[in-house]
Image (cartoon, rainbow, N blue to C red):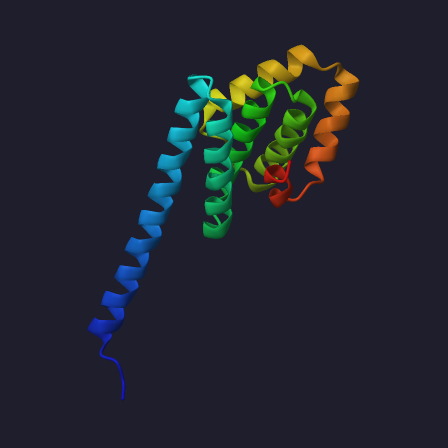
Length: 143
């Protein structure tokens, strides 16, 4: 028995709506994470960014992955783990350069950049970022 075209179209529309909803939820979580970052609630921000990264990876939403990794970098930078922050920053920069995606979470990017560049020497920063560029996305949440 064949499924009528109208039923197939309806099912495709429903699937697309679910995917859009999932993208929207991921984007909203990034906003919540950034708000926590601004409020200096770094542990909360880190949890939200970690969850956002997992969601974005499952969706294949590269720009959200980049935003989440820069957020993870910023949270670690604010909590004092600047070397790990630089590794995550290197990973996000690598993905961004290779996918031609630009981060939209400007605040997290700025916080991470300022802390990393102000705290680490050029040698330390370059070494950490090179290590980060070779990491897997999953490694950003492992620390």
